[in-house]
Length: 96
Image (tube, rainbow, N blue to C red; front, side):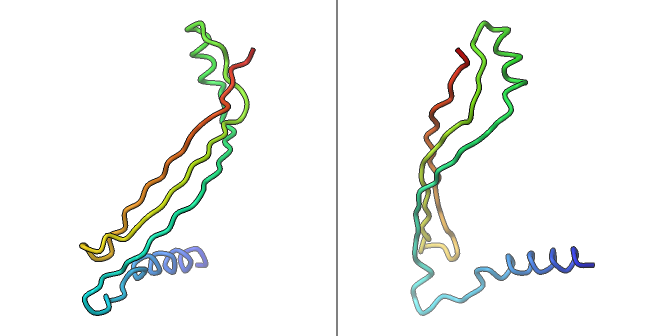
């Protein structure tokens, strides 16, 4: 019962998230941007099994990535928000 109430509340909040009418001639406007540091700890076992057969070195360690993202409302179409996310991955080291 609790799960169904929570699911209903979540879906209804998404349905009405942008139901506000525009004010006058101007549609919604705005934007945002930010920095995204990421550290991934993948399991390389399956990949290492395949790349060692090709004569390559095994991979190990975490994957570090950094980047940024942002969005802006497109004022021509109501409630349309366009965005992007860019990441740079580094420090993926083969086992020596």
